Length: 75
Image 1 (tube, rainbow, N blue to C red):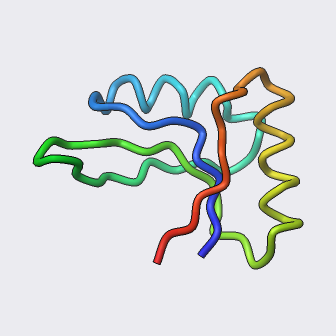
Image 2: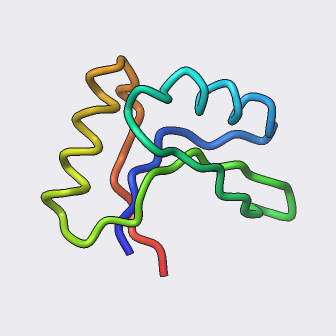
């Protein structure tokens, strides 16, 4: 699956703040994960069916000033 990841944080509060700040970009969600035994909260949108749709979402996030966003592939 293709997702656009706006950011990843060790703190859920920080992830929530970014999600709120970028709400104008569309539906974002927090995807909890774990890295090296520590919690990680990823702010994402998607999944997208194709690269064109993911690129459009990435452009929306970049337009809001989130230049750290990236397209990621997740199983």
